[in-house]
Length: 457
Image 1 (spheres, helix red, strand yellow):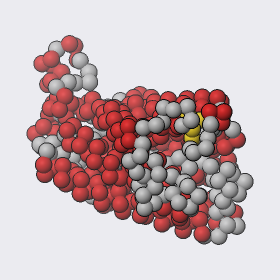
Image 2 (cartoon, one colour; image 1 turned 180 degrees about the vertical axis):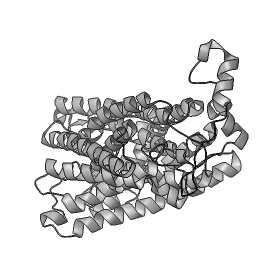
Image 3 (cartoon, rainbow, N blue to C red; image 1 turned 60 degrees about the horizontal axis):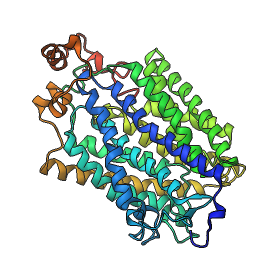
């Protein structure tokens, strides 16, 4: 920022960055609808609140210390410093980042910091205390998100973050810093909190597919700010990433539905929404590195791969309620590795991947970055989750989980049936009838991938 003047601010770029920040902000409520529709009636409010509370908690952290630790200077190539705590000095006219006021960049990056921990919440639906979740968001954001985002995005001519500036791994808009990062933490928490009561026995279907579609639509809309906004200017790069985002997402819908049709005989609404999210996740790191045809390939493969990946939790025995691991971890990893395969020098990132004659160098860089981030995020999340559970409590008591987290944690229900408090209490806590049939593998028919909320979500 040194040496820049007010004259370098471009009004069009500033307007685009601020508009993109607003689009990304909308994604967190969109995520709340997406996740909220996929859980049972007795959990919908808590599920949505887990997303909404990140807006409040992370905003405070970001203003006080988060931006400074992420983008103010460099300490050991893994974290920033405290020179801009409280956004010190960033209100001055000369505080410029590129062609926009630094505060526009602050606002834009804040929205990324907000949605990243919110993504994790889907893995622990139905069974986490609200206080435990808030404590986890604070700890994980401070210990994991800020240093990882710094490592990926703080560039300073080789003197910045170790992933983006030293290793030269590419993450245009957050495949590593956001999606794989959140997905690894989601896996850790799913293991720490354990399985939901009745997992693999009781039907746990989405209570509202219209809410799921609404959420997916808001996410798709907001994602143009997520990806194209990361160009930080209203120019060619923003246009390329915008088109690539749309192309990959459309192809991923088709890829997911093909796998769903082949494996379960039906193409479902939930599968379509989940395929769209998988495509959005996968194109996020690579949207500036591939051509539109490359984006179609990334999306088609991501849709199919993630559709298959969501069933792995049954084989490995972890209850990732809404498939954060299958979609965000796997999708983010594939999208990042895809840069090393489909990257084209014709795209803004100007790197040729293996399929474009560039060799395996970039693929190796992407792999190293993602492996290290995955291990770090998983480890910290696992330890943090254990500490929270042993101190203030993270996992709900079994009786409270059966009653419903909405009633126990918030004294509310999502739907006021007939205006009768007695009736809505009875309905929200009524046990789910046991499924009538048993499949050959010994699990109930209702837990097969085509009928569970977690498989296509």
